[in-house]
Image (cartoon, rainbow over all chains, first blue to last red):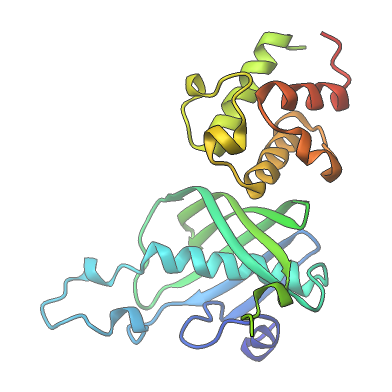
Amino acid sequence: MDAAQIRAVLPQRYPLLLVDRVLSRGERSIETIKAITATEPCYARLGDDAGIEDYAYPASLLIESFGQSAALLWLAGGIAGTGHVLLFVGARDYTVEGHTYPGDVVRHVVHLERVVADTAFATGESWVGDRRIAVVGSLMAARRPADTLTTPA
Amino acid sequence: MSGYHERYEQLREIIAEVLEVEPHELTDTGDFAEEYDADSLRAIEIVARIDKQFKVEIPQSELPELRNLKTTYDAVARHAGWQD
């Protein structure tokens, strides 16, 4: 899947659409990439005195990118269906093992573990080259009818 | 085959982690919702953990039965066929 196909599946938009390409997708697993550049909005306020440590890509955005990858696996598989939205519920046992910086290409490997009562559980890892930067013990996303989210008149 | 006590304590640990309390704080009959502020998603997470740990599937229709540690153990034991 390319950027246009990803955009067609995910509701997120610039600057929070955090998956650039899908490398492969099976029934229960997906591999995606997210390239980090120095023009990411999260670096906009860095001053001239910023050190390289200030350029470490935020873990919160890494989790979001991983979560969107999991959503692509679930949504593109047709499991979520139309008229529903996916809500990120939370992540447990998320371990940061390394940092990532502008110029890096992050590769997320996501496995869908099980679906219980319209709630999906995924595990996985994030890599930069052969360096593992994060392990995701459990990520939860819930499918809910879209009309439950509309603003009351 | 692990015994009743070991499985019961394993279950206590799983549920305590989901409810974000220490295992010793989770009593046998303390109501998940009223005493530990659990919502329906926590119950779903408990079911998913049980499936992963014990390879036991609890049907969605039985989620309301998972009120406390004891009733949850009974539900797991029933589906797993544990006799003791």
